[in-house]
Image (cartoon, rainbow, N blue to C red):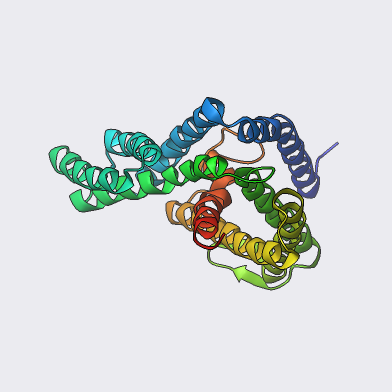
Length: 274
């Protein structure tokens, strides 16, 4: 019996959904468990995620015709990881800039020397935003921890935006970057994050509901901004996914694009105002 194109599409969607569920069944416990335990376990997970994300970013740049130094890119990520733990971020940033300029100039192959140095520096800085999960985990709290709070609010944003967008989304949010995202979904994401902010903020940190709602809105906005920025990188490189290591989800950058923005924003928000 001949299989129609519509049946084939439905079959592929079903397989993709099944792969997403299977990945979530092992991925969520690993992430939540490492964030709960903290210490060297979380440090190892952050380093692994950073290295994989670094490789995915490098692939995007190469598709654009760039040639960033692998040493400068991966070395920059490791450098920023250690200097941030030691509280010497400014010194590490200076070394990152000078080191990549030297590497780009000494190994000129294709593309602009300055562009290749900039690609490597931007990639190292972008991927190193994972480190703020460690910084959030180390902040003292009366209960729970801020790293889990960041993850749960990000998920609340994504889930709310996805399901409301699928059901009622009609107005494109950013057609050029991500055609499937809608303004209705974006608003739902903010509402979902605000509600989660109230629930978890009150339960863990004894926050007033208004504080939890405001933090949730900031997190929801940051999560969607991170998603759109990573979509811009993929669109610029002409690919659908940054990687394929997570079946049904794409790559590490595809799955953690939101948290890369949420973690530093929440960290500085807490440091400045709480």
